[in-house]
Length: 340
Image: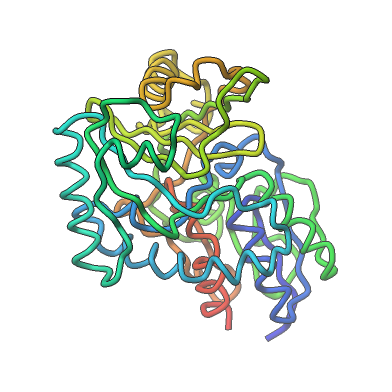
């Protein structure tokens, strides 16, 4: 087998796989359509598996745990300490009903991941960890090792490392991956991967899940951003606050996209995110609303991504849903195994 690889897709998944291949001795070229349609552009960047372990998602929890174990080495390879924005998480509940949901979720995780470091805490105890949290929260858990990265700095670091090892990034739109040069072709183009795989003769059953994020920027009068990832539930709705150097990313909306161009934020989703974020951390009301964005995540039926061959020349890596950033190192390692 030759040692030239073409990668379609310049998001977190495509770049992570490209870097792993380059480190393994492959001459690598990435064909990138730009950030506009990347799921990685509109992401919180949460890592780990405890906060994403839901009953019925056993396979996804297993893959997430495997990827969490790979993140320390992956961050070392990136060589940029600013990529990481938090090392631990707080799982919190606004009401007793929300707390009962968290208890069930944590029980599911503990049954499947022995040694999971999840400490039950009262609302007052959580406020001692994050003093800007609201009073009167029902309680939750402290999750050690459940950190986060800045999604955009992650992509930039991957691009920089690829440049250092001689890989090329070509800005272009690819319609037929089989026409690309190279001994092996990887399709890692997010939601567009299904169409490109079909050109190569494969059916990859993914669907688009739309989600909004808000970027809130701290002002000189604001409380500091949290130092933990805050994964909350309020009125049965999930809400997350992910630290950034200048503020927080707020997210957690998720619903079916009507099509590949359904990228406009919905007023109701934005309203819910703001209401829930400020209810959980009231000091965010003085932050600037710096960005409102929506993205479409390529999702498989069970949340476990497809990392497999289409034929003896073409491979695919897609279907990561809400966990594309978190599963990047696992996907890269799995891709190298399949590529070999």
